[in-house]
Image 1 (tube, rainbow, N blue to C red):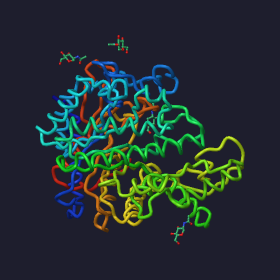
Image 2: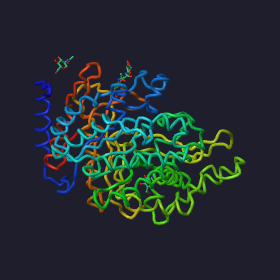
Image 3: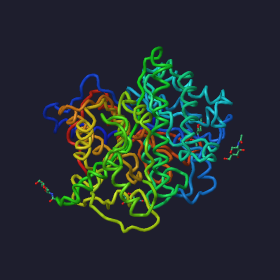
Image 4: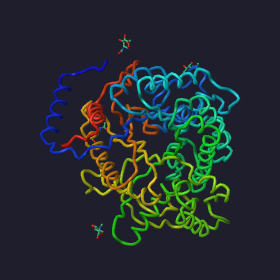
Length: 497
Ligand SMILES: *[C@@H]1O[C@H](CO)[C@@H](O)[C@H](O)[C@H]1NC(C)=O
Ligand SMILES: *[C@@H]1O[C@H](CO)[C@@H](O)[C@H](O)[C@H]1NC(C)=O
Ligand SMILES: *[C@@H]1O[C@H](CO)[C@@H](O)[C@H](O)[C@H]1NC(C)=O
Ligand SMILES: *[C@@H]1O[C@H](CO)[C@@H](O)[C@H](O)[C@H]1NC(C)=O
């Protein structure tokens, strides 16, 4: 099934030899109950954008009407064609030996109008087939209910700035629990609400929709949190007793390092993580609920200076705060990078923006080891911060991975270094008391990376996007991960090149 080049084999044998020479004793072993997997999302891999009754979503609309918004003017019309090639995907997952596969449901494939008035049988069957096939092969499906591909109909009503969208989401998740909950035991409500909402530079960034900077992001976040809370309570009240699964949210966060030891910079780094991760984690995982105090204070003060009547951060009611608290059986963490943070007061003036509110400048320290883009100790610090800040919640690492441009073909040794080093950081955090039970590589295969199109590759599998067959070939990192899963041990001796 997998095209095997002999030079490739020789390289791999050499790699193993190198490891075994340098391996002294196996302290890099994960606990027995620790689970490994890989992740994808619907828009990024499925293709079949208008196949068998699927409705249009915001990414279809954006890529078709504004191709210039995407690197190389590309789109997800076909992507990895997983809508047709899902059997190959399951075979490749089996090859890796993963315990779980994280993927998302395309809302508009199941509900083409976005509403429950019409259910698309073929869309429903697609996920039935995938889930059944995963289970038949001993792979746990971890299902994301919303991974950024909002039905266009709902965008036409205001998208996530409209809090009513949370009700339509609640209707959708009830359908999903009914259809698949007898087999799906780990649900994720929303993937990376931060990325959905933030409006850096007033651009339409990753949300695929224009937002009014300094306002839109906060309305969006509020609706997403309410949508999450509704989904959790629906599962809890109507399904949990029979289906006995878990439901949680996935948040993304970098780790901020203050650029100097000046108090201003130390405070800026703390403010940054509170207004990035804390924005969504505090309402759900903290004892008091609601947004972090520093976030409320910062935006309130700046809004006043800008002469607005009230804070641009819309508040929650008491009921909403209580309904949100504790609504996650686990915390999913997506992590990629460490950032260098310095305090920076933007002058008051229009328009406002989320980054002006945070008042930081971000960069990377060129001296970080082993490289500015590979900072495993930043991941360790983030994981320990989360344990301390939120009373040591159950954590699943739901995304972690390395992007490159396949310039070394299938021999992606820097990805192997990244994964090995970051998994060591996870293991260290576990040994120091963090309650982490799953690790998930982003990504299973090269795919449509949103506005970066196909220009950046995160896959363990290469996908030939020039072939109508979208042929998948394991990179060296796939063989590395397969071996790691089999032994539960991180091989020694990875070197950064
Ligand atoms: C789907 O879209 C393609 C263009 O991407 C078009 O050629 C085709 O006719 C469409 N199919 C349906 C069923 O609308
Ligand atoms: C800040 O202080 C710590 C501890 O004293 C030290 O390890 C670190 O190098 C200092 N950082 C900078 C940027 O000066
Ligand atoms: C690909 O990445 C390499 C290494 O980072 C870089 O030197 C090269 O310029 C990149 N190539 C393209 C086409 O972006
Ligand atoms: C695509 O797959 C089919 C069926 O397996 C095969 O016959 C064909 O040669 C492949 N085409 C390419 C371009 O790889």
